[in-house]
Length: 185
Image 1: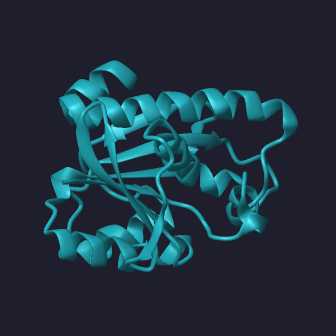
Image 2: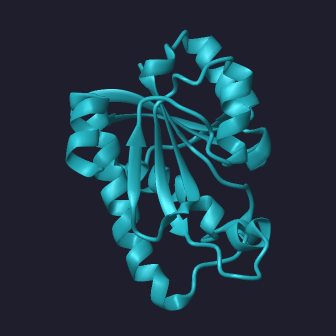
């Protein structure tokens, strides 16, 4: 079993914000798998899907971004999933808009949801897929920027980025992190 986590904040007020692109990737993956019914479990929403013939559990933590680790820890422990079989999708304001970057491990790089996951799991060896939403405009606080919605002209680029990110997740699922990095980074 592979665990794919999308980071974001729950509720309609946060839909289509920069911070919720991780949720958007999972939404697209769920649609590709026939949009099966989600269940409330592990302090989030989960659904088991088949993508390119591989089974995966999609997890949308509903704990708020900065507390995502508790949902991930609960799902990991229940299914006994190795960190290498997990993939976190999240926003990154240090990457330019429309850029995606896969990594097999490393620091949180300032992403608080990812930082909470790494702290609760006690490991930095969790693969992650960062989606570029930056840069933060001069004079803006990063928190205000990530909680803001994309400008209308940016939405087309975001849709393309989310599509590429979903493709990268499926590549990771079928061929592994190195193949996905070689193709999508």
